[in-house]
Length: 255
Image (tube, rainbow, N blue to C red; front, side, top):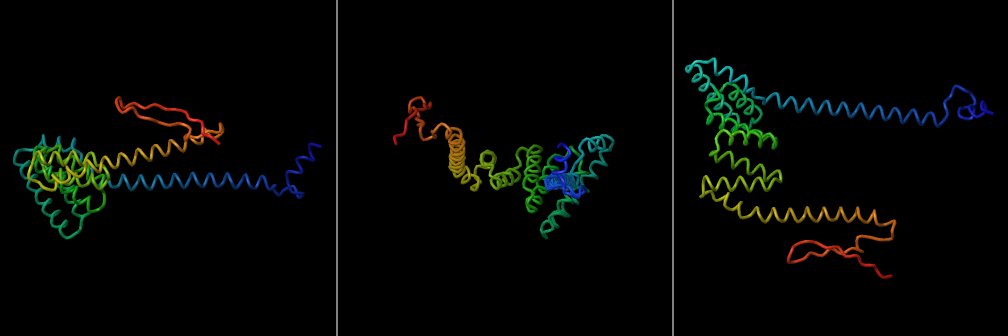
């Protein structure tokens, strides 16, 4: 009988696999293919990301060592060369060649001595502007942040970063930057308007997120309560106007 059962799992020819075996083999192949594809996609994305990071990377540890071993004349010469590269970058930027402009600003940052913080702040801000034009918003924010770290009074870098924060829906951060701009330049009208406008937008966003979260919780609650013949409609949430705390009351629905 056992031999007969084994025979039933295969075709009468013996060498031809059964339907179950074929299905199992196909599923295993698909799983293997999917894993390989995922690994390939991850590798490609990682290569692209690393490529961009390597292009823009500034080795400040190495630059510090070079600065220490340089004479005052050499430091000045390197600063002037960095300014020349910055001007080349500015020309490319005006022509709309943003990637080439970004490369020039990076070259300048790699040779400009660390002691010239204001010059380096401008270079980071300019490179951030080029990245903005390339829709590299996160990287542009990073460069603007570096610029204001080097020069905390750099209004243009704050303005650029504030707009980037707004574009990426980081409204709280944008508001803080606009407030900082008004501290540095109280007459900057765009920052004043934004400082009035953004609190309302932030509140509206928070209310929307709260409604979405409550909707998701209600949906989950209904799934959990359904086997018991209940729903979230059986529970009423009330807020105490004095303390602000919430209480939950159970109500039996009438049929």
